Every structure is written in structure tokens, then in C-alpha cells.
Length: 345
Image (cartoon, rainbow, N blue to C red):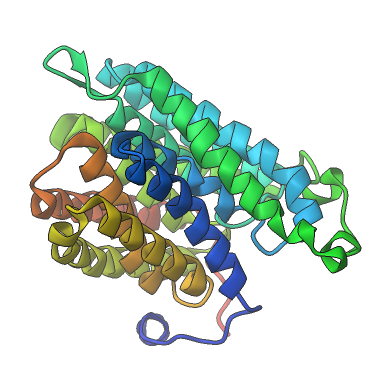
């Protein structure tokens, strides 16, 4: 426990420089949104932000390699978003779809060795789409078809082009590149991966059920995504405990930051700048301190959702996200008992 607390407040050196990775991620989420705000289409711009998650995958790979792998990721993110939008009017079907997305996305990510950030953003895409296109008083908040077009075109496609921008350099084009089969080998699941999938299935089913019965059906995606993130990519009890601690503390601080930033985010252009800064910060520190990354991730998702759905009470939404995170993290930590205890030393 002492070691976990020490890691919570340290920022160790990263495995590789991430400045340009962070720049690409910030441009991917901010440029389409900013252009559409200037053209008077803020609502569509917000929807493109939900498609920018594609920039987070294979971030350390070369541009030629990203050109091969990101269409697969973008397609998966789009399918998750489409399924969330389709099932949004029916809470129990939406919950069942959430569990299915979490389990299938995890199985595919593990089987094909996709690596960080893993399945969590596929779950978030599903949940964000369901909330942004949700039904209030018998009518959709946002029409699903334009939303999905914005996600695919303004979000995923633009992020893909930004990821390929280094190909303008001759040195990048000459860089040795792995094949798609080498980038995503498989499908193959070892004992550790199968146990992770089992844990995610348990966390997803229980998290969705708790949200449906005791909390709010439309917040189930946050509970489940928190649980999926805490389970993580490593089959270990100690790993999950550390992730749970980081997830909870980071979400608590991030929720407070979201409340502070909410008045500033009321201005569309300032919201664009905030989203870019938050995305930049996430990618700069995520491999060094997960809690610090959550300080940026939480307000990013909260501000996007609040602006897209017209939520005024950001403080209330922030408290709800903290509660959902605590539930999802607790479930994920408890399922860590399915792993064998690591030998001492």
C-alpha cells in the first residue's frame, strides 16, 4: 500500500517522448470543432469530438504503421457509437449492449494485442453516443444520423489524416514498418487474457445492473468504463488495486477541475481551447501517472457531454461521475481475487 501511495504522487520518466503524440491528439479533437464553431455549427463540432478517440491508438507506432492499423480501430469505434445511438431509447437493451460491447471489445483488443489504451474508449464511445443521442420527453436530443456522420467524418477521418501527417517527411516514409498482421497478431488468448475477459464480463454485468437499479441507466457506461479501465491490461491483483486508487483519486480531482472550468467552457471558442489543452495533457502524462491523466480525462468527457446534452448542473454531474467511478473501481478490484496471488518478493 505504501508503494501504491508513493506512485500516486510521483511522475517517473516516460518510456519515450510524447510531445508530438500529445500535439496530434490535441489537434485531432480541437481543429474540426474549432472550424465548425467559427462557421456557426457548434453542435456538430461537439459531435466530431466524440470521434477523435482514434488518435489515441497506436500512438507510438510509425505513421506508415498507423495508416494500416487505425482504419480498423476507427471502424470499431464507429460500430460502438452506432450501436449506442440505436439502443439509446431502450434502457435495458442499452445496458445489455453495454455489457456486450465491453466483453467483445476487450476480447478483440486482447486477442489482437492492440495495446494501450485498450477497450476502455470503445466502451466510452458507446456510452457517449447513447447519451448524446438520448431521448428526452419522447424526442432525441440529437439526431443519430448526423451525429454518426460527424463522428465518422469530422472526428475519426480527420484524426486519421492528422496521424498520417508525418508522412509528408521523407524520413518518415523511409522508416521501417511492420505489416498489419505484425501490428495486430492473433487472434490468440492466453490464460491471463481469458481471466481478464472474465473479470470484465463480471464487472460489466454487475456495474450495469447496479446503475440500472440503484443509480441512473444512462450513467452505466461510466461505471462500466471505470471498471474496465481498472481491470486494465495486466492480469494482476496489485495492478488492479493501484489502478483503482489512481482512478478514484484522479476522478475526484478531475471532477473538481470540471466544476471550475464549466463557466469558462460556456464560451464555444474557449471550450475548444480547453478540450485541446486537456487532451494534450492526457497524452503527455498518461504513461507516467494514471491518476494525473484522470485529472484531465474526467473534465474532458464531462465538458463534452454537458455541452452536447445541454447539462447545466456540471457540479451534480461531476459528483455522479465520482460515485460511478467508485462503484466501477470497487467491482474491478474485487474481481482481482480471480487472479492467483503474486509470490512475495
